[in-house]
Length: 477
Ligand code: SF4
Ligand code: ZN
Image (tube, rainbow, N blue to C red; front, side):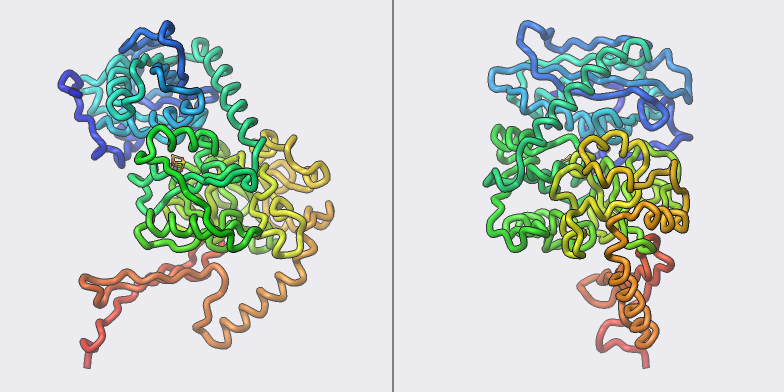
């Protein structure tokens, strides 16, 4: 495979490239645009002209510097072994392959896709979607040899994108609908995905019927199909092994998988908790489940929400806290589909005496509530506040009491625990209250290094203490 005719270098080495607003020539999709998408479809050989790139709307070179445009990317592929179940996993590779291009930053997926093209790339001659299409087609065929032929179509204006956008949304809905038909107990195999390790090296997704991948784009059926055709690829089988705790969703096989894939960094995962041994989060989660200590409840914010959440933090600030492959109790990257699973964070709710995990949710931005409201318990739905009802924690507290939210039942115990913890903290000065994180970064050869303590980080870290550790035997006199 050659990219000699492409005016910018291409390769996995450019995957982590960030393009800031000042460096960008144009922005495509993203939170400022209403309708945008990327979709992969497996089609019949007759419907494809191999290598063809079509542009509906204006091309890159005709876009004004600094402007933002809709973007639709439709990748159509064919091959005798291809099946519809592979579409979602192929589609997820748009992210990776676009990021191979030096001068393109691609974020997210499905209808939240967001691209920036750098000024430098355009100056070098990367000024047409024809070039991007050609790169995608070559990479698809080279990296996924079961794809025999491919064509790519771009949609770059509001009128042209309308129809394919509607089609894409219908296809995403169908995939999600199907995923809701099965549960973890119906299957004897889970799946893992490490596609995001180039950005978050200790992150690996565990995909089960009840826990759709946090990017929202790969469900259990999709993962199964991908692992079948390419068992050595980025999606692979995870035999669940023994279930150590059905409420938490802790399995020996999942623990072994994360230990291996995080290179020993993470040893345990509770699939159904955001508070104890939570699933790691990379950076492309659709939403965040965050703990609100003042009401012992949880909030949910999705990445389309531009304002601050009930805890005063915008999505971007919480995303920094959540992502990067860390295991961060109180901040958990999730897919929208997972919220409507009956197992949603069930450990956090049921272990406190509630009926389910969803009963811990006290706030979600209206966009999320509108999308999944139909699937939530009818009696709980009106008790979950949005930005339209309350905008600060005090008002939220009052609201929860007024609507008699189930979380009230946990308050007496949670508050008593908190007081106890605070007393211990004050009395001993060295106890670690909930949410405080400590980690040691060893020096070369394991000697010395630094200790990083994130103190009182229930919502935000109030202090980061970096202490030099004197190696043993080298103490200053
Ligand atoms: Fe794979 Fe998870 Fe990344 Fe989605 S978020 S691409 S499932 S690693
Ligand atoms: Zn990711």
